[in-house]
Length: 218
Image 1: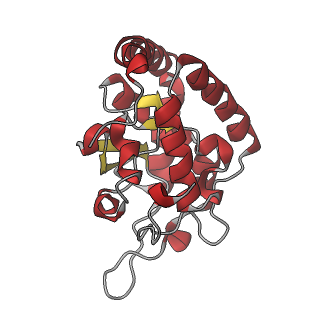
Image 2: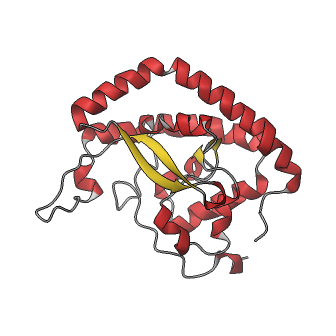
């Protein structure tokens, strides 16, 4: 399956984009170390341990890595020992972490390690892999991102299909100018705190697959 990435952008992706990811993630980890420490203490006090939520996610070419985030939900379970729905486990403190995107800060480590980039399609759940159409799988042609084109155009308020359309648009048109545009648009979205919920869920509904192959659309 041929990549959707334009070959003329290979040098930018492999060298310039990666160098920027390393330098910026390292600088931010150093500069934000007091904030990270305070958040660790607050999460531990309000939500318990572990402070860092780690979960396997597919990265570039579907390679699995462990995504790191500050936990934002409790481990409350029902009488059968099953975890309660996200809405019931997401506390007011957790909602603030998510609305400000502070829960995403540990992903700077994923970026420094080369598992993620600052800009790219968001890494979703491993169980979604067999549910993608052949075209949707091309979102894995590049490293997943801390933010992306879908995130600055609606985030969780978008339908899954619309999010994937934005992901594929990014993969096809990846460039320095587009990355810079998305990076700064992200700050505006974070300040406005919009698109955090889907409108019907505290986070985002499960993706069960797309009935109509996106490649058949005009």
